[in-house]
Length: 113
Length: 112
Image 1 (cartoon, chains in turn blue, yellow):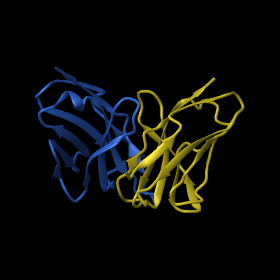
Image 2 (cartoon, each protein chain N blue to C red):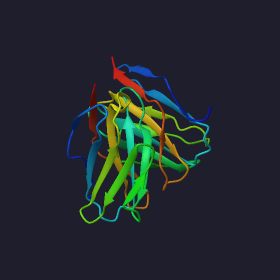
Image 3 (cartoon, helix red, strand yellow):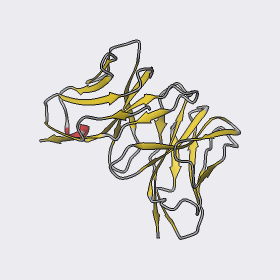
Image 4 (spheres, each protein chain N blue to C red):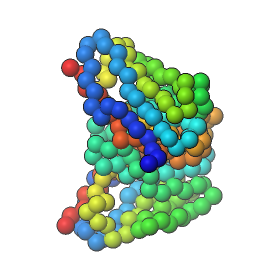
């Protein structure tokens, strides 16, 4: 069945370092992936997305990499800042007729000053 | 400003009571969604609507009901049949079923 999971539940990084958050997905037919950031008590905030016809996409301080061969997605955050501390979710679009987004369980990013 | 508004921020339910969570969007999006989030977990889909006057069950629809009478509004009712309603409820909307979702700020529902 479809599933989206994360390798590391908690990631602690030093301020200024780069962060890499990983995500594995099981449905090789999924064609769209999104990363969201969620701060405590708030709704998820869109960070970046990527379609399956791409393997890399860059935003402001963030890069998403997609490796379809091993069904792996990663989010790279450059020069991590204290404001980046949050839970990060990856999501994939299901390939049934509903095109539902399926969310992973999340990775908590802690930025040490 | 444009966005998705959820209310109330906090809600308490008594035993056997139905409660309704409000979700309004002014983004002119066709699709709207309700997700449930339990502590330390991801989001699970309750109901979604791709167009006015139509909606479909998600993965955990039992004990919930929705309506979509207006494009802007997608209220969720947590019925007494939902035995474990305590959770953080998130409403989202999207331009279509194939696009990214925009989320509201959530409603925390607790049982008295």
